[in-house]
Image: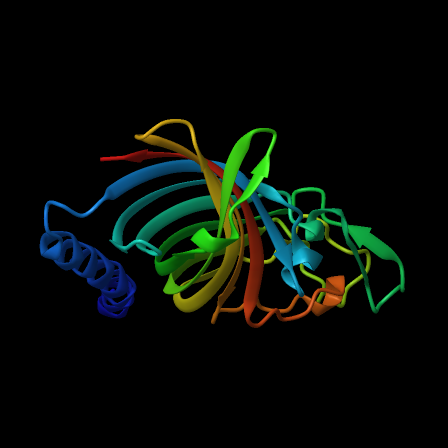
Length: 240
């Protein structure tokens, strides 16, 4: 019990640090700096191993930003995504006793992400372009963050049985990989203005987190380390 409480506390520490950093930066800004808040949605796209487990999924996020100069925004971001119906649900394993293949009809796999990110965004004001009468200002970004994920798998038939016939009601214990992992991100994007207060922004971001998903080799799924995904984002920015 004590160990469990300690692990939970350790996972909360990075989140608390993020909140404190956010508060300190916010308090330090003078009132003449441009600030903004953005709400966005889009798609999370797993890659480089994570895509063996999951396909793309919707993503929701919020950003607070302040402009430190004409070309630079400092951004605090939170986003949420949930990968459902992992590929292991449709996979079979070969039982070494009779060499037949078996499916786990009660299997379920999903992965939840709650990510806290601090990043710098640079606007390329000298690279503006016109599309359909709108001025597009391109940008790029880079940052770090805490990537809080929980990967859960349950309902798998235990493949290590040795007595025939296979007992398909004998299931493995549910397995959870949970971690608050350090990570980084790089992004490309841009924005166009509707008026002095509202922008439309878009972006493509690459994320990498120093976390892992354990292997399920009987189902031909192997350890994934690190965890990597793209986010495609479209959002509304309100400046104040």
